[in-house]
Amino acid sequence: MLLRALAVPAQHIPPDVQSRTLLYRTLLQGYADEGRRVLVVLDNASAGEDVRPLLPADATTAVLVTSRHTLALHLGERLFDLNVLETGDSVALLRRLLRRSRPGDTRVDREPEQAARIAELCGGLPLAVQIAAARLADTPARPLASLAEALGDAHRRLDGLHREDRAVRAAFDLSYRVLTERQARLFRLLALNAGPDLATEAAARLTGEDPHDVEEPTGTPPPSTGTRTTGTARDEPPPTPPSRTSGWNASTTRRPRQAARRPASSRRWATPTPRRGRTRTWARH
Image (tube, rainbow, N blue to C red; front, side, top):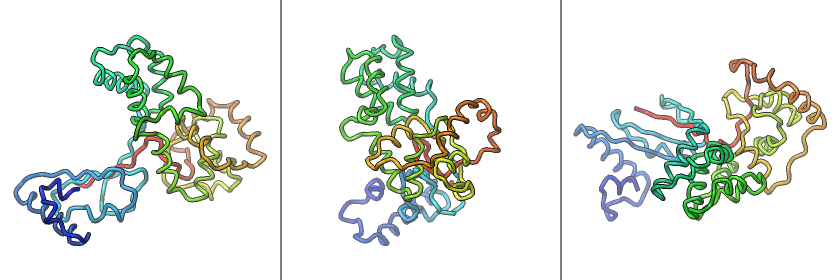
């Protein structure tokens, strides 16, 4: 696909990966020598070995790679974490998408509280907001309150965020499949966590493990509407947490503000979970 984008006729594309890579890098080097800047975007990369053949050999061509997790490339790249959308940004996206599909659609402005509710139920995921907007565009007479009520059922929310070939469940499943068995178990246990954050101590309580065995050096997004919903919607039976978990949850839910005041620098996040919308992006310039 990249070679075709660089105007290489199909009959001139080599059959093997090594020859294709050489041709691809030669073409980019030619553009660089002519002073023609090219930005290579490699979206949703799953592993470093998938990216390496597509990296230019010259020092001029910029590359932007997005991934659901950190790729171990170690090429001097810059890492950026893209968080989920804030509620206001999600509402703005919902409004813009609706008006693009149906100019003059004013439902978001007429029902601002319901629009905010839909944005919250979409968990800040652009994909979820896009699907919600598409469903509303399909039925212009449908009130936003109707969709908000449908999405309010946590057990059926992922089914509602599906349209044709786009589905939030499929996006979660892609991330879930790369988890180790231990990480997957913790992910399913996240639905039992009472608060919006999950520190190392909480993860240790959920899994019954020592905090030092649970802790990872990299930060992870805290549990959210998306991860909580997905954690309860897996086909696997939910794991049984240690018996002391419920008592610990009860004691922590009585002191939510104490946990909220804990300095961010002192928080330790647990083993990585499927990214709800936080995309690990790196760029080489």
